[in-house]
Length: 499
Image (cartoon, rainbow, N blue to C red; front, side, top):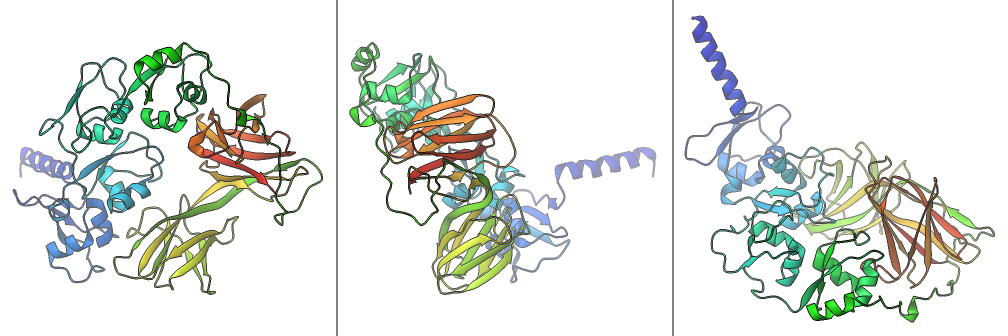
């Protein structure tokens, strides 16, 4: 063979490797199918997750009878989009996780991760566009649009969504938008099935120095929650001078008059109430002011409960960020079982253990051999429940202060390593008007008044934009402080309650 022939053959081999990654071959033209060559270590469920199809669809396409038996080198036909389904898209909203998105669309975390090339299933961000295998595609903006809106100066996507009683996600999908950036004169398709005309009066207000969301809400006689929803605010603590906020339910004339007035004083109920502790809770009482410390512990909750595909009663325990952990379950009837978490692609790329064929009922779940809180869970016969656990710094060794108060970190999404400078601290007392002081080494001090953040419930406030570090949260007059660690990205919630 000549040198030229060898070079041509070599080029064709390299080109074929570039065009078809390991395990993937071209199918006959026009079939709409892909042929996958089984690699060492692959299972049918892993291959199905990779292509966003079901195990049953692959079995039917290849006349397979045993879903647990495939061989290295075996050629499998992968049906196009799960046998006729079409892929959809989802724009990540604040508070969503890959697990919740997968649950919403009836798919798996593994399938979502494979469809989007995600190596870290814990890391998604607000506004990210995810391909959803098997989901329906968004309606095209250019075809069949019955209602258009032309963007005006000062408009925001969240304001337009509120005005037409739809969502930011729906507008983005209907117009193929990959961010909330819009410009004056742009024509937007308002998705079908929503209002074709504005939903009542609204106006815009420009934030001035000294404004807070609570003050603006009082000024216009609307709730903070309404302003948050109308403007799609992911962090209600953060507004800035010059920002234009849509004020729902307020006409432009009223807004113009109110904007020139001085903000009214808070109503009388915003006076700090007396601390009125309830009877003893069984916790020890201290005779000296108390500082409640924190340490990393495994904490979590039940996040899903669905019929099991095989009608086998199953309790999945997922440990984010770590595998080879001993997890324990104990039923109210005394049934006890132990498992070791690992990566089982049938369920998730996150370390998980599946307790299968167990009695239905109420369970306690915890990580054995490490600091862990007990999580309450329930699984019905023939159903599948999911408990998600994360290692987070939360409070330990609770005591009652001399003034009769207990405080603790009840939730903390922070990890144990510093990341950024955008953490949020939420504080709840259940009462309106309590003064909360937040301090940190280096002289930092922040103050918030409970009752000013209705989105967190009655008697809550928050402070945002916090750097990574350890903070002390102090309830004035209660002889108690709670220590909390923030990684600069996560959100922590501290609760004070009568002891």
